[in-house]
Every structure is written in C-alpha cells, then in structure tokens.
Amino acid sequence: MSIDAGGAAGRPGGPGDALVLTYVFVVAYPLDAWALLGDASRRGIIERLSLGPCTVTELAAEMPISRPAVSQHLKVLKDAGIVDDFQTGRHRVYSIDAQRLDRYRRQLEQFWAGALGNLAAGPHEQERGAG
Image (cartoon, one colour):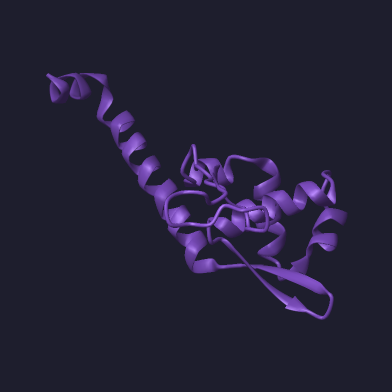
C-alpha cells in the first residue's frame, strides 16, 4: 500500500487536501487447472452450473457450504474466466463459459497424456532418455 498525502515540492499538502491510498494486490499463485478444479466445492459449483445458470442462493441451497463460501468460490471461478454473471432484477445469475473451461480441460489432458506416456514407456526407457 502506498500513501500520498501531498506536501512534495510543487504539490499542496495542507489540511483540506485529499489523501490518496493505492492498494497493490499480489497474486501469489497463478490460477491453473489444478488449483481451480482441485477444490471439491468449485467442482460441485461447475457441475451444478453445467446444468444451467443459477443464483448464489440456488447454488448454496444444493451445497454443504455457506452462501458466503459459495460467493468466494464463484469469485475465483469468475476471475479465472470459467464463470460469467449477469444481473437480472435484484439477482445475479451465474453460468459457465464453456470455451474457457475447455482451456483448463485441455491443460489437464496435456498433463495426463505426458504422465501416462511416461508410465507406458517403462522405467528402462525413461532412464535411457534421461542419460
């Protein structure tokens, strides 16, 4: 966080001046398919939204977690681009962005194709390839 209260050369810094606060948020871990889909609650939300759009209240009614927890998971999914939302009356309705979700599916498939390919090669071929 940085604070700028003025007072530097050429800038006012008197009692009536505005105080500007700037918050800097750091993403410690980039979102990837493992982080997004590794959480059972997020997988449950995605499964439910695959049936059709719904509100947070509707989601929370079907899940073993609180409505605020559902909202937090929806925020993570929305920030990753997997979930879209739109306002309808007083309610916010959430739905899946299938194209973005497909990107994460391909990421997981690529991992498993490589991992299973390595297992199929057997330990002797892996050692020859490494040395």
